[in-house]
Length: 400
Image (cartoon, rainbow, N blue to C red; front, side, top):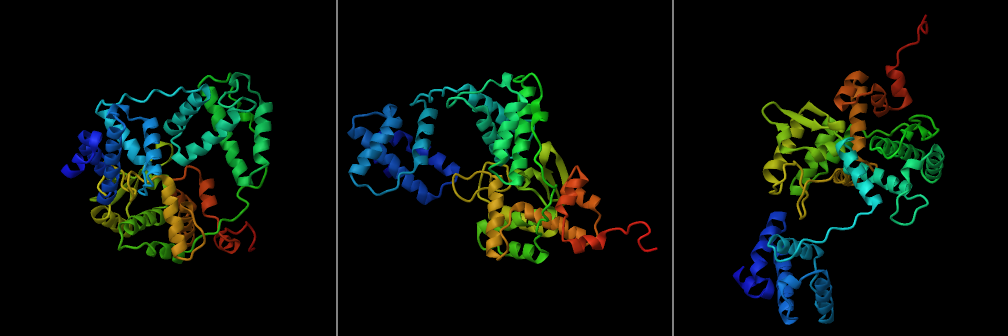
């Protein structure tokens, strides 16, 4: 490090702090060396240009990049490296905090809506993003860029026209999603006094038979093949295997796997606290194979991290995995096992189908899947007609 500090020019006093932040973020020694070389190059460039560290800003970064391009440097310049340098210099008081961005009324409303979706509705990050996209489109109807329509003047006419236009360009399932997203926005606008009436009832429903398409269930053999496809010889494979078994054995949702924390595992009791929808917490038994896979990951493959979430990204900056990465784990496993393209929810459906085939009552299946409505369980448990006939009760007088 001392050699690096000597060669770092104006950045020399800050090399140790930058390296410590790189290490804490989970970067490998090789990547850290590469980034510290860039820091040293910046420090020497500042001295050549007769600038101080206090002059280091976005325009200085642009000038530094241009100078390297003219000199035909080939080393990759990591954008994250400059971001981290700014963070360290601001923490040291060398640079002033960045000026507060001017927030438009539209962005202020959307930011508040995001918080409402997270804290009041307890929606997953990807769901919040989808709801926000529709809200942004609707709230800018007929307005210049960045402007917000007058929500106090909203009526069912604008709402119906918007939903009809949205529904005309997407599938039936997506159109139903738009309806749910729109109703959510209108409830929020009413609860925050941005409309005088709750206009959610003005959103037209989408016509179509409920659950007309039978979901294609993964067989038990396909599920096991997907689990077995995870390479237990690598840290990523051990993490993915633990994720796959939690999905397959407990029917967890992607967001529930992502939210799982170290304190949620009771090893003595063999139980798991699941953080579900609407801030629900359910205690579930931890199956032996899922528990063993989880222990294998935690004791030999999980990267060191200050985060309490169980599953951590393999690449730096290391952080808790998002829900969409859980879906990626399932898709990769399906490809390796030569199974149909599958999302994490397909494993939840496969578990319901397997339990139904074992004559487990729908009510019990609903308890395992933590459904509030038995009708929801019936959707998950839909299988082919022959199987349904096998569990159907006779009509009165049918065999008389």
